Length: 360
Image (cartoon, rainbow, N blue to C red; front, top):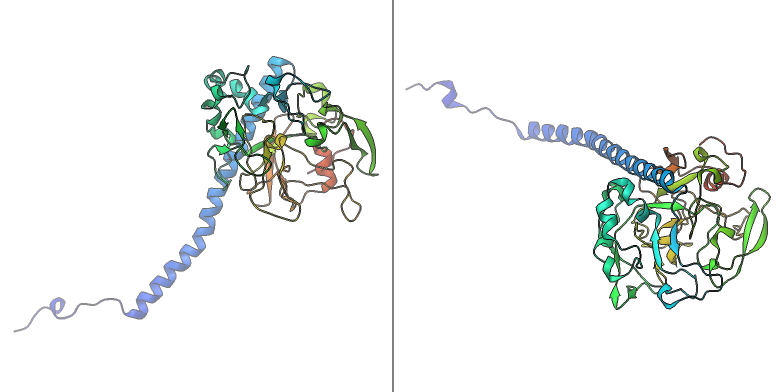
């Protein structure tokens, strides 16, 4: 009996053919995966840029309403380090209640009026009455590329333990964006240390000593600092040439949109030769350097642009490849290379030092 050929033989792949097909598929995946990853990162970068754009617009709307930009953070003013008990003045930094930052103050200008109204600004930012609202996760403050987390975090003290206020630990909503204090920093040195050294010329490295007495404006040369009231007309270097906001990934350290708490410290999440914990103001602010007349081992003023390998909690830090986004004073958002000229970065960070800024 004869059977049709289809019943007598069952053609199929040989082992060699199967291995060749697998190799081809693996090669195609290897070729496509980087392209997919690049496309995803491009989308994340676009979202990050849009976030900063929204923050910049909110800052301008705040200025239109109040005739000035919000303070870096609000603190009971003292020139002696003393004040009423409710102010809870930190004896080292002279930071005090209420502590609300620039991020809180622009909430009504970002369709977050409900959250803003849920916060009792007459109480300190760490008051128990504000505990729930202060933990709100706001996507506009979160860069999708940041790998350090986007959930609320525990505020820490100098030792790295959870800071306790009023018998409770503090948990604040996270931010991946920070405001610029300028070239100079004024954290602990604007407290009980009543004098400070500032650069008068970053090119010749000349400095002068100023009396601070708790007034950060005697040191700060950027748009945001403790109790600042910067107006558009104060930015004489030009708003398009002055950095207002930038990135700081929580992979390096925790930042918040909520407030600066007396006694708090910001701690780095990884170590490098130069980084370490810093005072509470760095929960919301960073600076570019140079600061305090500091020079590196070559005699050059210490400047740390975005992603600079000091990896300090008081600098900008982004996980985007090659640099990070900044929001300029005019509201425009630009991507700055991590290889930017150091003096150019310093020039872009001050509002009224009179430096002639080049292209970047």
